[in-house]
Amino acid sequence: MLLFPIALMALQDTPPADIDWDKEFGVEERVRDPETGELPVDPYEQSNDNAGARQFSGSQMADHFGGQDGIRRIAVRTVELSRADSRIAEIFVAHDMVRLERTLFEQFCFILNAGCDYTGRDMAAAHAGMGVTRRDLNALVENLQQAMREEDVPFAAQNRFLAKLAPMSKDVVER
Ligand code: HEM
Image (cartoon, rainbow, N blue to C red; front, side, top):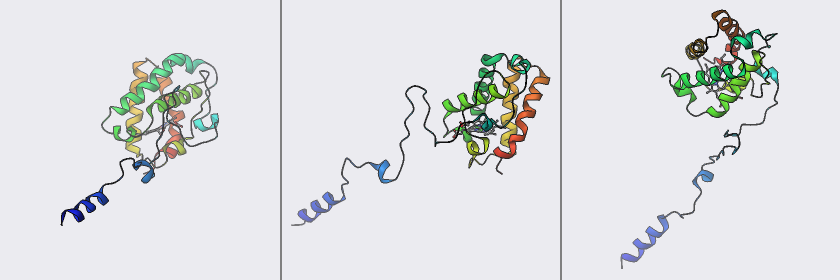
């Protein structure tokens, strides 16, 4: 006699096997572009103004940084060092590093006048809600300095580049 109601209860408690939990919880699945390997981002207007600084004139700075190849190595190495840096590694975890390596390279290449356009977002939009502190920024700058040293960028050229980036801190640092 008891068996029937128990069996009925068990049946009612079993959720359907084909339930889409991502949909139920409103989790959006983001798929990497098969060609670029990047995740999609919300639409924005592309402009070199988003780079946050004006370009150097002439080719001297680009030469000091080893042209596009040297600049790419510096951008990629800065990201690599920062992801391995226990002070700030956490901040990078949930973000698209394929895109960051590309856009950081483009930004550096554009500012150094090495023949690129910057296609990323502006600095305020790119860092919104990340809670970056002044300390985090200092850690990232140290990693960039190390990457530039490893590429033998002359010290004066390193400092001229950092001076271009410094005003961006107001758009990056949130607390
Ligand atoms: C002046 C200093 C900085 C510059 C010039 C800079 C530059 C950039 C650029 C060009 C992007 C890519 C924007 C895009 O993809 O549209 C970006 C994104 C990002 N930056 Fe920075 N950044 C700075 C400081 C920092 C600091 C201090 C941190 C953390 C310690 C940080 C963490 C990130 C992360 C996690 C992203 C990925 C955002 C995403 O795609 O969701 N950045 N940054």
